[in-house]
Image 1 (tube, rainbow, N blue to C red):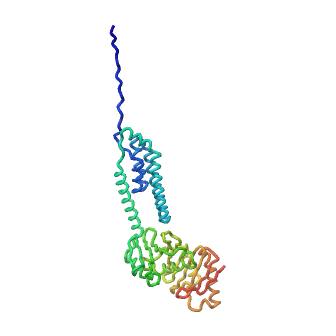
Image 2 (tube, helix red, strand yellow; image 1 turned 30 degrees about the vertical axis):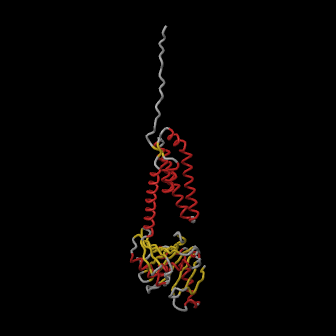
Image 3 (tube, helix red, strand yellow; image 1 turned 135 degrees about the horizontal axis):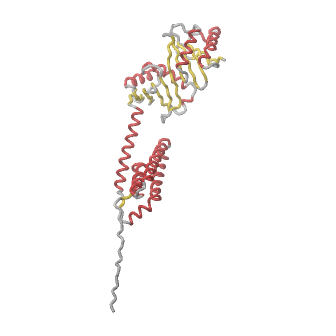
Length: 355
């Protein structure tokens, strides 16, 4: 008796070899090293995209941009030696993150015969991004600082916006004549734009807090304003990082043509106009070219009158000015107000508080 047995052949399912490539943690580290965490996370995002995880891909890029922005901010503020440590920490952190989040998936990909993304490509992307990034930074700094002119061999005036080279030269020469620029490496920034004319002085640490410093620069601003387009202008005191530490607006309000109120600090054009009209009604402004200075700072309001020699020593005249200040005070915020009587060279000869 014969037996016919049917033998079913064993069929082995074919192994699926991925057609795409994935970047391993080494490629992510290379991209990060040469192109900031943005490039590292872009490579991780490519992996997520090829694995069908689009949401994670977008999140990876967003995280990379945020981390890079924060790192650049820290690098700008911290000493250079500490900045190196921040960069090293980012590099290590990016490599470990790639290994933890995608390492197992990339390893399985390789076991199935999948290929790894080229590390040369990671290097190229990193280098290209670095060139673009630093080119953008250079362009932004150039736009912010504008062009510059040398005053002497060491002092420099930077100008930007609608300010011209002629404006910068005029400003520099005026500052040289005033004795501010003495060829010792002073930097001044002149900008004209939607916020008006701004003259910024880069000064030594803490200098902006010294008594009388801001007032001195306000007077410099008052003198140079006609040379760079007129009033009003802003004067700013900056630290070495170009952060604004003090600022003041200097303006000039004409009262019937010949008399003027100069206003400074937080005093406004409206304050100056109100003061000028009050001085006119009190008979002080008579159209003969009198100048009065109104300043408002954190320490209070000051009204300064330019007077002839010896007026500050005459009790009768001093009493008259005290009366004028009391009557004008409501127009500029009320009492108390400091009264200054100054010489024609603007040296304060009388300083008292009027209550």
